[in-house]
Length: 421
Image (cartoon, rainbow, N blue to C red; front, top):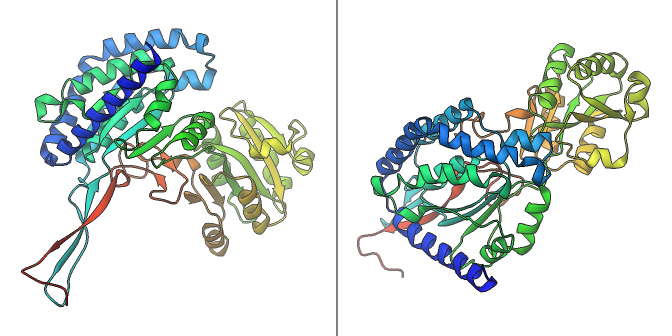
């Protein structure tokens, strides 16, 4: 394909998505839910073709240089297909944010003022490795009244195409525009650049993947971008921490799924409990195969730990590697998180209510957790249904972004002939 043809194709997709978004904004909730439920029923019946496509993608993973964590994110199983279908049903069960009255009042002159939820329009969604995100993104965008252009990674192209085909084929049958869910079929990286210039047709770009992808999108996009760069998540074990509870939370935060953005990357430990807590938590982590990289005081109590570098405290390892640092106080922990954190997810383990309150007030992150795993910063876990990503920005959405975060608002004013003096 020539450069001119590529640019033309991208423009054509964006124009069709814009037209679809106009039609979709007026579709009733029942039709959107019917599409979601039909797709949920259809996916398990066609699991074999999706899994066959996925097997081919997984077999080619080494060609694309995917490591173990990335290959894990790429791999679908029969259980994973069922989970995708369940996710579609969960989105169908959620309230429709389109047309929702967010605020309302009547002015002294009788003018009725309503603030209602409306779709954003067209979403350009870029993602890597995880093919289940194809269904999640399509479900969330359509339910919130938005058309979506999906651009998955080349490593998952076959799986994404199989899932997209199953979802898109059901659109017209339920009165939804056929171009409401489009998939970019080319792996040419230049296509991304073309789409990012089309702010006349695309209202929001959402990159979900590695830091290099996200930074490229943020640098090139002419439209707003919803994003987080990294997930350098912290757990701070306070002086008053309950050891048994804290150890279970640390192990879960790090090991339950280490290759995701809400996994623990740095453990901070108050110096008062370091002599007794570190050997216990270190043993529990070692049993899970975690490599520890610690400060000088940490290594005094965990001699097997490697020396931590400055880079380690900035790192999003996405692997069974954990940076550890002993801090002299709660304030020092807060300061460390402020310096090295990514404003994603940070937790405190404490039995002190004042300590918990200070931590939640002072730590400026999308999610701040008290006595629970960092892994709970997730759309499903927070009752939002599927999420399209986690934002560390402050405008217009922050944290897990579900249906409501894919809408804006408009004012509807209803009068009976009022004119302004």
